Length: 416
Image 1 (cartoon, rainbow, N blue to C red):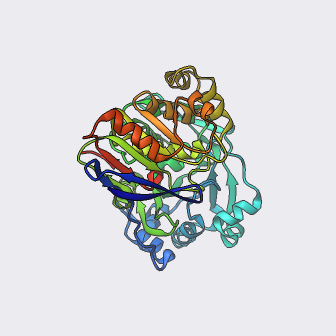
Image 2: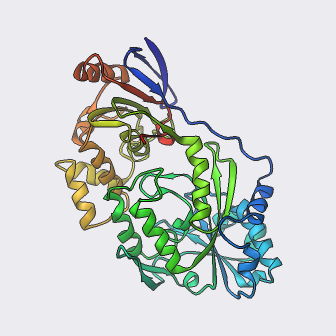
Image 3: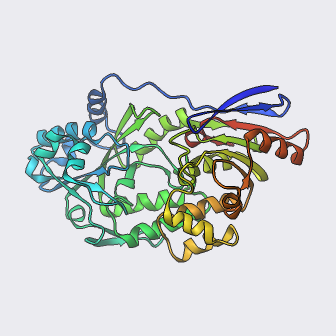
């Protein structure tokens, strides 16, 4: 018997798993943060991937836009942007010709203090820093998948666009970073929604860029809009920079994803009957909206008709109003999947994504939520992970295979 302690809320929950059933415990393996983050950025700029140096691209330009992530993302813009500005200055581009645009997507606007915090006071005082306006976008073309590329006017009018971001798994677009700083970052509602509806297509999943329709659409949009160069930081779970990549928006991005894979992707021989997934405790299991990441990752390792045991306290319940509304009004797990195709709504999109998993597998939920609420949203309530495991083992038989993800929100199992 193997005894495992998994994080739940602020503490641990104990689980006894028969050795003959346990096929593995998958843990992420963080890389160490670099000692000198600014030097790492300069090194990336000196060795661009698939591109001429930024200095060469910038020569003779009169209107440069740097795309930066908003306050909801962990991108270290205050570290990435100063060396980019120095490079532009060396190419003869003065600060007055440079604008930093914060990509808000659907999110709220920043306060001036927040903008200062994102890029640092010195940069904020040096160059113009503005928020993307979802209602002031101009049409630049249409992707082969039919997404109209409508881009924030100041970005569309730039003669050089540089994207900055952090790189991590994205539950449907494969990874963050690359041209995602453009789409959804600085596009119109129509553009974002047309692209996001692709999340229900085959091939959209974390850890997959090539052959992922959503990611490929984003990259085509970046090309149409003219994103020329990216600077992306790979962060570990402590939000420290482990690598910076710069250069071509696709080639440099793919190089960066290798570091994410090394830390958080774990190969398994075959899918299993039962997967036990802890989101990693508080705050990762604060609500079901956040715990969705762990469920999504776990779903790639479980057989059709198998069971996921999701360990997530959900002290704040479902977590997001539109998400909660859709989960509670659905009479079957298939309904939100249908609804999202007719009307894309932010928040509700995660209801559709969760329901795609619930259509395929059983999900036991170990949480502090009321049993009736858990049943109303198509999960199976259990008082403990042990109770859920015992029930699942009884169902799948003595040779059932069990896999454990102690940090499911950041561990991606995959089969070749």
